[in-house]
Amino acid sequence: MKIEFPKDICSNFDGYSFFIELHERTKNLILNNIELDFTKTEWFEANFCAVLGAIINEIQSNLNSVELTNLKPLIKDIFSRNHFMASFGGYIIPDATETTIKYRKNKLTDEKFIKEFLFSELILKSDFPKLSLIAQKEIARSIFEIYSNAVIHGDCDFVYSCGQYFPRKSPPHIDFTIVDMGRSIKTNVNEYLNVNKTGKEAIEWAIEANNSTKPKINNIPGGLGLKLILDFVKLNKGKIQIVSSDGYWEMNKGKINSDSFNYFFSGTIVNIEFNLDDKNFYYLKSEKVEDIIF
Amino acid sequence: MKDNKFTIRIFDEVGGDSAISVDDGNNVFIKIDNAISQGLSVILDFQNINLIITAFLNAAIGQLYSKYTSEDLQEKLKLENIKPEDVRLFQQVIKRAKEYFSDPEGFENSIKD
Image (cartoon, rainbow over all chains, first blue to last red; front, side):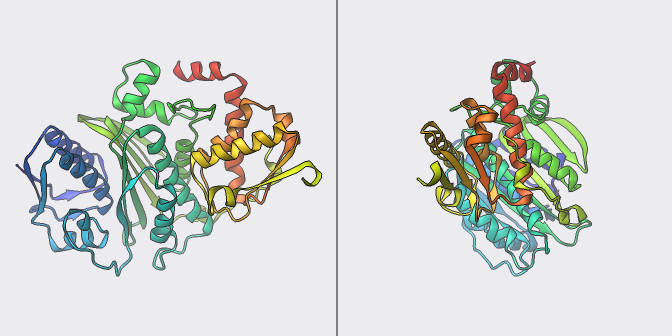
C-alpha cells in the first residue's frame, strides 16, 4: 500500500486532517507493507514527527512494515538531525544549527529523564534565544503539564514528542508537539459525564477552568494544569492546538477556533507554539512566599 | 526534634531539582500528614527546586485539604525558599483545593452540569 504525502505539512487544521486520515487508512491493516511516499512533500514542520512517529508505531504494532520513501534532501536532513530517522532505520547527523528538539518516544514513567532531556534540548541550548530564566521555566512547566496530562488521562504506554525552533519566522517561535495514543478526551469526558459530546465539545469542556476527568485517587484534586498553560500561551500571544478523536480546538493569539474532522484519532495531540518575541517573557511580578495563604 | 519542627526537603524527596511527579507529591503528602498527626509543625523546604508543576502540588499540598482546615495548615505548615515566580502556582493550587474540598460533591456536580 502506498500513501502519498501532500506538498506542505504545517501545524494547522489541514495538517492534522492529513494525519488523522493516515491513521484511519492504516489502523486496521495487518501484515502489510506500507510506503509513505514523500515525493510531493517540500515542507514538513518537524514538530509533526511526533504525530508521524506515533502513527507509524501503531501501524507497526499490527506487524506491518513501514517505509519512508522519496524524501527531499532538506526533509531527510532535518529528520536525521532531530533523530526521527534513527527510529526508522536511518542515520543521526549532528544538529549544527541547533534548531531541533529531538523526536522522543518516552515511557510514561520517564518523567525525570524527560526533564533532563528537555532542559538539554531546549533550555540550555547555546543558540536558542536568550530567554529570561522565567520564560524558560514557564515553557518547561507548560510542556510538563501536558506530559502530566497524558500520564494521568491517556492510559497509554508511550508519549511521543518533537519540537522545532523557527528562528527566521516572524515572530520567531518554537513549536512543541506531544502525542499519546491512549484514551481520547472525548472518551474520557463522555464516560465521566455520561453524555455524548462531539470531539470538539469534549475538548471545550476539558479546557474550561476547573474541569477534570482525572480519576479520583487519594483525594488529589485534578485540573488546573491546562488552564495555566492556556493563560500563559494567551499572555505570550502564542498558539495551542488540541486534537482528540474527531475534535479540533485552537487558541491563536487569544482567539479561539474549533472544528471537527471527518475521521477519528485514537488519542490526543497537543501542539504548543511559544512566541519568542514577547516582552512579557521578561516581566516578573514580584510575589513573596508570605503571600501564600493556606 | 527541634522545637517540634519537622523539615521536609523537597530536593531530597524528589531526587533532584524538579517536582514533577504525582508519586513524589503523594509521598510528600504522606510525610506531612504523618508529622502533623504526631503534633509536629512541618517546614516544606523548596531550596534548589527549579521546576514545579501542578500535578505535584495537587498531590503534595492540595490533598492536605481533605484532612486539614486552612487554620490547621496555617498553624502547622510553613513553606520556605519558594521562588517568586512560583508563588502564584502555589496560590492557585491552594485556591482550587479549598474550593474542591469545601464541597467535593457539589464541585463534582457543578462541573457535570
